[in-house]
Length: 502
Image 1: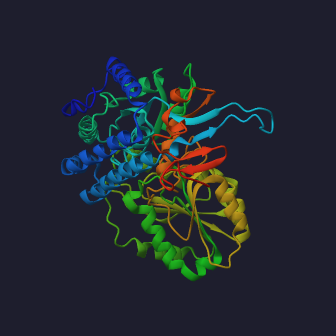
Image 2: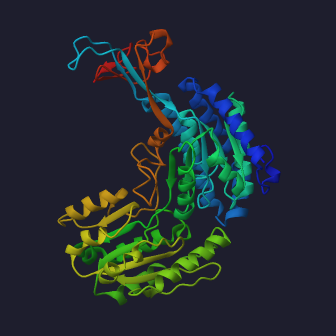
């Protein structure tokens, strides 16, 4: 089924329906790819308005299906709407096109240079897989869908089976917004079911895939995409462990504050954030004090059911598996009931050197591990045992020498925090949400304005007649986008003509 029938949200899309949706998306893409930036931005703004108009029915459906409360869901919907409007502003600005003009130059240093112009163009139809833990921000109209539409692509979204009714209602609002703004029919579609997901990544008209979910699920899609006759980009955000390191001086100065922040961060949203701090490295020698402080910090914790029964089962298995490894003990015993209580495991630097797998098993839920180290000089070495991370963090004092540790964390992380906690990923220009594998499968971000660039590719036009060039590459610059002309940037709107040179 597609989004036109949300009352049948639990039915699966047939292979024939999936193929038809992709073909309609390709037709819509061909109609839309030459659309001017202001019109494309208007489509995003119309979707945002449609979601706002349906806010209460959407939040009600989310409450029924996800165990997330109305306050959390309203906040997440506001984030989604904000993201659409921010991306619309970015589209209007045109910087993502990277329009570059090299005029013909007979005296160029390596010989005569022809007229050469390059611009980023949209990839085509994009398949997007929604996540369960953020049913608005990383689902039907989440970051992948929004940034692909902003790039000028068409999207076929495979809805998550954890919130099928909400997915269908959201898709209905998206379709209404696109229709109201005059976008081509088929530019967005919702499909459902595992079979449709497999067919989506294999369809020859699909030119890229965006995914937010588990490492196992993402790896399965990556492997399947690699077997296509035409492999395509796979932008997978697969989660992470998100290690945080505390120096001895910071520990002595702010122990209670640090543990309180840690307790809040690894339990927010019942630990179902991909940025949850799963590891906390602290100086050894105060095991009982750590336990007592954490217990105190968690006194006001209010448990809630995990998103789905399958997630609950996976969480229980993961925590028990890590706890059974040599050198791992239980620092703060929780429970695996419905809802679960937080669990904190404990280990040592010596134990993780013997068995680095202790540091690499994600426990998606309210659990984390405290790793006690003997000497500050160990920290960079311990960081070297980690795989790719979405985030890492350092809690330190002004005089601490953490240069080596910082360099190591920057090598393995998408975002490195100073005296902060990783949960909470703002949507902005400088944001980067990704990281080396297994945190993600690309060097790009899935959050923020830079996410648009994932779904673009550069094309150079050599010696073309001026009137046949794409608008962003013409000398008169009718779309008034930033252009790099013969090596210097020109930004419209400053000098009444093509802008000032930089």
